[in-house]
Length: 239
Length: 288
Image (cartoon, rainbow over all chains, first blue to last red; front, side):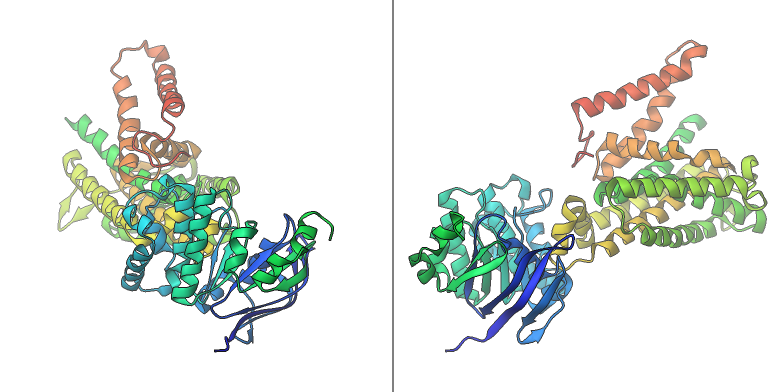
């Protein structure tokens, strides 16, 4: 069955303080697929996510479900896009349950919010056992799961994940990637993920884009990118 | 006995102020020095309405929070772009403007002479004239304020305020318009402070601008830091201690020529020691 196009970037440039960090980025994300953005530090991966979510202004076009959008976090959340930021950013002095419930603001329905929070507790059993503990007391991996669970409160069509395994142990990294794959398969959520951890990520991706110096230098299936030498060239600074 | 009633009336009035300050600063993380200004707006509203128009203090208890809320709304919208210490400096500016206006608008506020002869509250031909009756009124309004604040802290609105305090940018990711929440917390805090101002003016029966200086705002800061930021009961404990301790020190028997200075010294030392050994305050959730 052919998948519908969900998000398209056409010649998007963006940056900070008037200085562009990404240049003429064009990429596609179909519904229910996992797409990876890879590249060395400073390549502009996180900047692409920030431009998509409206945290920074951009030139060029961003199309969501075929329509040009002018992104802001408020609009995108309503449209079905969720963003899980780098560094987890859980609210340390709120409980696990409160953290999850706070992700459901745009639902505007407290009962539905509680129902979905309970559903997510089933999907993330480790969070269920710690639901009344302060988020600040969780381990790094548990905080990352909480951050992802919080992003799923609105049952998004597209989940943007910024470095979800940063600073986590290999065992936890494996668990996080399994969770990402499960979410994708069970809920048909499209996922755009920025990640350093290439070996764990590529096997689960449908498509990958490789960035260097703010430009896309390669795009293909995860398997094809893993089999080529493009990543070595990019990470060794040969491109 | 009347002296004890007097102390407890002050504890309840400052308890209301500390709860309001805790809502704005403790729960939401807005560093404001404007608390004394809204306290003053409440007091002057009651004083002016009572002395110039004969309005009952109970009517002022309804009108002053509305007026303070409207002013807080305008101030809050104007200061919406500021965060942290910039917001604090902006609210200090607002306090200075308030102080200058009440000190110089003599026709309305009495200027440096203040306003005397403020009436006591009356309800169904009963005047809250005695300290005991006024204590009951102050207790009722204090409990009402505590109840409102407790409900807020247990609500989803309260959770959003706590999240703003922790990481406002992270909250925006979920579509929250955090500026609206901050404005609402600031306005609610101002309205509650104005209630305390009405009570104070009616209790003391005389006010001037010296009651509403930055010292008063700093006292409110001290109360919630000492009691523990982010907790209503911390604010109440802080108010209790910082009203009781100076009164208690009156009876220690310091030589009269040094009594005032020594009281200030002990009072300051207590705060320094607390910050050194328990920076979260007595019952606090957060450090400043």
